[in-house]
Length: 377
Image (cartoon, rainbow, N blue to C red):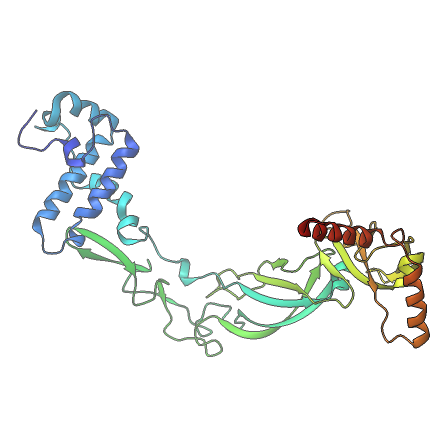
């Protein structure tokens, strides 16, 4: 093997058994380290960078690598098809361009300066009943629309945009830096590729004007808080005839005076008297569909007990399923008692036994046992 050149494997700091991913990883790491722009004023970095590129050009190609493994550098000497610094360099450099500069190489300009319009957001609050039934809402929003005077091209009627003389309509210009060339957005036309010498007076050359737009929004049954509805093409108009952006409707549900929502299920709390809880009874509660239903309370119902009413919840979005409704009863302690009522409750307390309040009786029995054990009695 020739001694005038460093071994390609040593140049890339890899083993001879390194596979393609390892080669590429090593190449990127070293190329970024030794790139001339990373080492301004250091002439040796350019030489080192070329060596790294040359080594990678050979080893990444299966046929060239096989020839190099067998004959060394001699395989590419005297017209043997050795790697150059032209097209081969461009191929390798494109692999690391994004890593070095945080962007991919771009070619060509924008089509006539046309740009997609921006997406818009509209916040809408609806009631729980509206989410249950669904609705068609009318909204009015200020939005940029295509200028009618110039049909969106931005030039005054009777004139047309002209090709940018600085970039030739490409939207980008090339700039030499060292031994390679970079592209950047054309400063003359800001990347549009065209110049407007006589702008439209209605839109000042932008191709868009602001108007109030009335839109109809279909809100399906079962939407939840945070649901997003997309209206394609209803956002801002594109620049100079470009496609329009989209409009996104973000829904929020107003709090309800009676129901709390949990997915497709609805929950409500109903206070009941101590007598109803003890003796049993029934009461009516409203439903989200503006109806009402009866809830039967068995004797001895405890506070916080829940009763399920099937299929009286919210519809599931884009489904035929419906959630349930849960009624939680809360036993209300009597207040502002008259003297007679107090006497009757006191008499009731004297007549009560562990059978009428088993949970309380059991608890206080355990308390007595607990303290009795601690005192040794």
